[in-house]
Length: 184
Image (cartoon, rainbow, N blue to C red):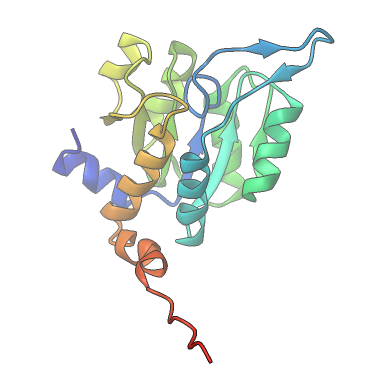
């Protein structure tokens, strides 16, 4: 449930970072016979990320694993801060924030497993998914209704936009009915 405390914390987010496996994907790892890792990403999540970025929130991906598929997805979404193969996500986030002259209070993170707890607990806003580890769910500000890889990221993006009074503006272009062309 999005409480007034969660809403207040989300309203302060200037940089939002996401884990990948178990957050942006359903957490299942697929490998081809050649050993290439495949990932399935949700298009709703992708558009949510674009709306959040267009509203001025800096996006980052901090993942413990690395894959070419993730590089391509981040590039497609225009996410410039992509850290892969990260063992200490808290330290990685600290460096990202330092380079952007931000602090943890103005940052958010979304993760699903115990390795994410140090960064989740340090950030001003934190979120997880319904199938995230029980300990993680106990320590975050918000647990999504949507599952991992099934719109959970979009849900968080829209919650942040709403908390910052930017959701209506982000959705407005899609509510305009284009004029019909006159037939001659």
